[in-house]
Image (cartoon, rainbow over all chains, first blue to last red):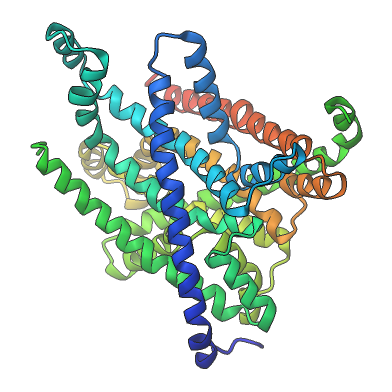
Length: 223
Length: 221
């Protein structure tokens, strides 16, 4: 049986994997940045009085949320060239993962915005605030704390979904592990290390997010 | 090639792929439910060792990517003498991963049952097993069904990853057709629509129906 952990091999491939981890973190960060902004657009679009717009955005969000990310990544990567638009794996990967998570984040924002009491809106009207002022000064600051937990979960979620980018050739952690595996015919060490690296980042991150959440809540005077 | 011609030519392949996806979905769901129940109950155990095993399992499977777990099960597990064929490895990985998420739902569902129910069962001198099975779990089930609906959608989407170890599911078929025809928009677009229909018009309505049935059974309708 080939079960034999080689430590020298482990030390040999670890620097390469750690370098790739940086790419994984960049991918997760960039994808999340897109998702945070686009998610807000999708959430606010569903609160406009235009029925048709609300309906289209709602269905779009449902569609994105009910179909596999991996398929969306392939779709974005391959459909562009069919119509003459060439995109690098990084660009199409970021578009796909950013779009996917923006649909999830829009639901988180929606929940947060809906949790702001109706009285707050009425008070804004009574104070003669414009909708823009009402959102930026009154509504959004109150919608953030209830949305924080969901936002944090999806940050960890996007990080754990970045290995899917390896299928279109983004040189992140999984891609590097695959490359090492096919060069050396050893899969035990690279795949196990990838798992360990993921655990070593996602567990503390989840803990940190909980701490951050309590901190923000306390800052805003909510318990 | 127009979309209709495309569908007319390739529908048998898509149908076969959808069948494999459905099989993966059903098998992974059954595995996930079983694991969730066991791990969820173990996490509520008074024994620290039992609790520790469950927490370790849940954290490992929730802390890493499904793709990593899938590759590990398919490529590394054979080194330990456990060789699974690709179809089995596929649904086992998906089921084990989603089972870890489900375990938290089971735990939450059980904890949401009011304390009075536990006390009443105790007062009727029910055995712990009977109390759990007849009193606590049915009520916990009603409380946790809505999040299970979401989890099953996640599970369905995650079955697409098994195509990466060459299980011939819907995703695999779409990739294959894309590779031979270069009609990416049609191949991937059609697969997206099939997944969407599966999730939105089969899984979700079924879960809503199940929620209704369970609520009526407990007289909460």
